Length: 140
Figure (cartoon, one colour):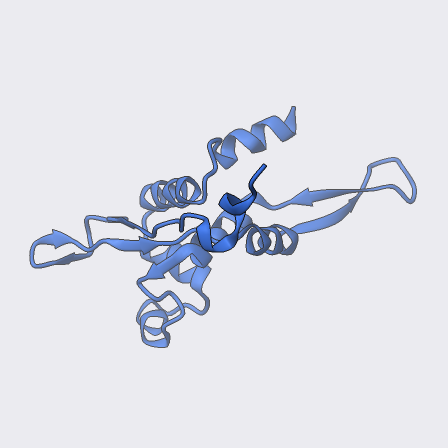
């Protein structure tokens, strides 16, 4: 067996994707395309951990379970994967009167645009199942 195909230098890079997140941002009469990148599994794990908290099991003393805020996770994932526009740009945040990349993204886009953008980010990151489906599965 030859493991050379698994070496980092031989792995194919995940290409950034361009996506028109909204028809409201136009340049030369065309919607401006946003650039989305795929983050690493380590970065994704860190995002998930930051959105997960311990919750006491009702009626069970000293027993806890983990609960993930999927809305917060999707927001952080979308912000982390956005290459262009630069959501950390102070002038851009100031123009919308918000602080932080997640808040800017949610303010810039309408709810439908945001949902579509979040779905595209998940697709770029290789998730076959939407987080809504995962959330429903977790509830059952």
